[in-house]
Length: 126
Image (cartoon, rainbow, N blue to C red; front, side, top):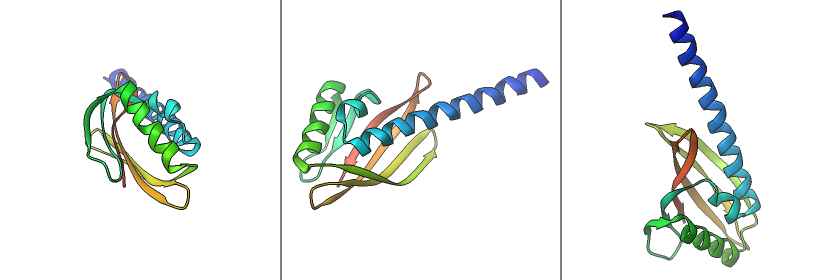
């Protein structure tokens, strides 16, 4: 019984380190405004909402990468400041400000654990 509790505790600790490493990579990609780096964390299909555009539901990873890259380029995104990061009911949230050319944007990323890795399932920018 003690061994079982030890193994379960170790698994929880190891999973939390993995999530931290994933969020660090996501934040780094946003700071660099690198859609290609960010896309390595996309789930197979994601939902995207960008300012002034209709929400795109269940878009594939490649199309999502192009959509985010176009937004970063058009808005001249040059940085990111994280404002909040939390987990609720198995979904992790990161919110912050994207720094654009003369305009800042609020961004929210929703992620879930999938195969011991965080996968972005929703990107919302306003």
